[in-house]
Length: 310
Image 1 (cartoon, helix red, strand yellow):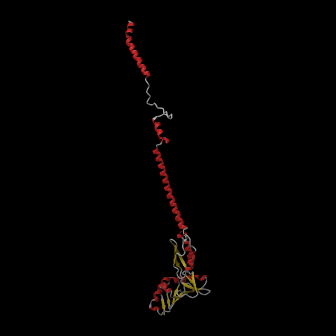
Image 2 (cartoon, one colour; image 1 turned 180 degrees about the vertical axis):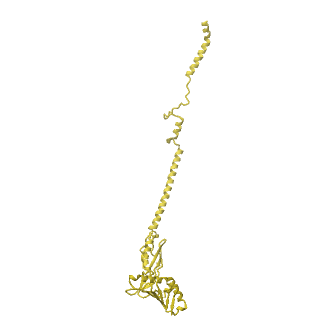
Image 3 (cartoon, helix red, strand yellow; image 1 turned 90 degrees about the horizontal axis):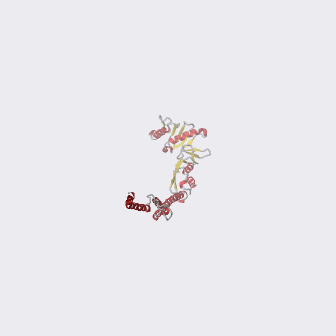
């Protein structure tokens, strides 16, 4: 039974064994597919040709495209042009500034010309030649750096100049305006002649003869009597200009005994220097009245009670 069964099963079992061997053999001989993570060897340079490696290779500087290189060259060229433009502008500005400085400080175009001076205000005392001599010392100096304050001080030091103003007149000139210190009275000099003094008692000129348009002041001489002279000059300053020209001489032995004589007119008793402005108004009114036509003395020492003596 056993053999029959064995023999009976032989053909079928044999076929199964044969099929199994065939399948097993094919499975063994079939090539194994590569895994998804497998990589390929780049035979040209020996590197692993992964996807990222291929991208990196394309991005390396030695593999930059010609178009990219051209763009880089154009960018560098544009940067150089912009830099040149900026430096050109800076050099142009620096050149313009240097030219302006040279023209202002060194060019004869804006150098002071002593012949281009406009001066006025000399009055009756200031000598124009003295002013010209001071101004001429600055001839040829750059007008921009000319020290007008120093020039004004020099002009003020001149006899007869109370103050001076100097203005620059471009491109080469100056405008000089003087405020003269005019004499208001004449004081007899010890060695003869007369000293012409201003309202502050400073001598601004001299004359050999008594001037016809200034009062002659006669006061005691000496430093101890300077207050008398100052008081008399204050009175002269208060007298109206038109009336002042009619004053022939003023005398005073003290500060309270000032009196003067009018040309072709009466003597005037003034008294002290107090209320001089009111006294001048009263005197001017009385001189225009009928009572003063034949008067020999007008007393305004008490201006609220003036008297007229025939």
